[in-house]
Length: 125
View 1 (cartoon, rainbow, N blue to C red):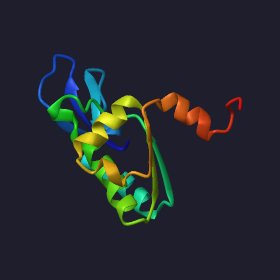
View 2 (tube, rainbow, N blue to C red):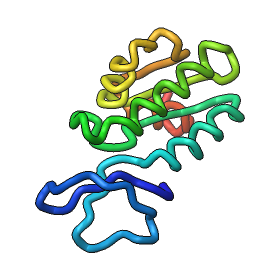
View 3 (cartoon, helix red, strand yellow):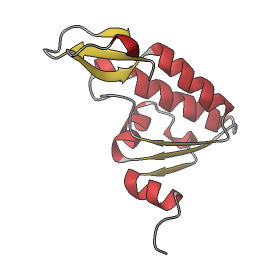
């Protein structure tokens, strides 16, 4: 990501920073609004989206914005039948459920690694 939400090691305040300005005390915990826009623009142009893994530590209310925004972008495009949405991984599914638009995703799997193996066609049939 180009921009991210971060906290200092002592869990101080949340700040949005450019990736070029990262310091040794920063902990990257979410993508920032500029990265959400960048990723959303790619999603709008795509025909198929495969998403495995949240954008950040979405379990914390301070760091869920990026993950939920990407989930919504995929679901909205899938609802409009502009993109085929594939989502995998238990935590990613939890994040998707938080958006209340879970049903618009075309295909889901709670096993993220298994999904990626299956999609890569390297599995043994």
